Image (tube, rainbow, N blue to C red; front, top):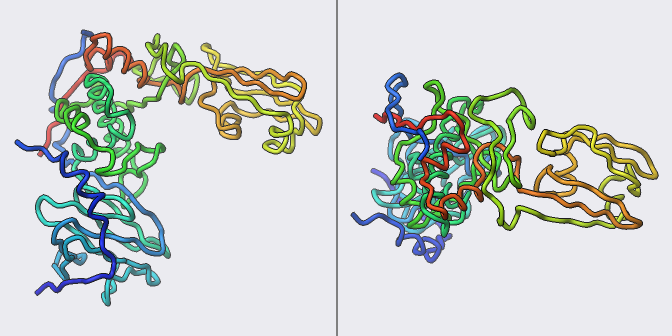
Length: 384
């Protein structure tokens, strides 16, 4: 018989109660079809929430259960209480029990607590190297409830949120099919897609996901890599000009992001500040682009200073100076360095501010997607 694992830690009930209100109570030549050629998918994603940590705090919103690797119930989790699962050599420990991994599952209608946030689904806590990794197993559509809110303001027009839902669903399935991690499909940061569990959900994100349920973008029968960014600064890029090889559906198109807060931006530094950031260059004398994309994004730039010269990629300089994009110019005047730029992000695929403005002008999500992913088709995946 399962026994109760009691902890001295009580989970934050207020943080959970904020989200109960979100529980459900009851153009262009794009068309909807079913990908019959692909196998039916069991759409439970594995999302790494915490990775290789000494210990992880978990819990459930209602009475939950702890199961071993064989699926046998070994303990109960009291409602609203937390458990600390720690690394012990090559195993993990929960209470007095050691094992390679443990499942923590809420009862029907409940949520799981991992680290410092609430999530839908269940969690597998497993040994990884010398640490503990917590993996949220969650239905794809529930995952998207959070991702849409993490990637786009929940107050934006519904058609823009729907476009984001389809792009995010397509992107995560593309990454899932090509995943290199044996234990999980994706992480939670912008390297993957922003996922913060219930915290980012809203009625609007649920409506956007439910209104596009199981819909993805495909090209030649395959789910596409539906990348997106905040704002291109007037025109998106051909993928090969920024990253690698040409991809038919990632072509540069006119953007509709004019008026976005990040459409134009400026940053200034003193030459002394820049010298600290780039000590091999020293006090900057000149910055000369060596290669740019057809739209003006810097691919390579020559930085000359009183200590030396450094040729950098635009992405490297963007990272060093924390710039919004690589679409910028640099002017040195006396002791000041002025940087003027446009857009936010890599500039490939869908522009989120462009989607926002198109939706405000009355375009549907199908038309938005058709504009930014040229030649792609809207399809419905078959689900078991």
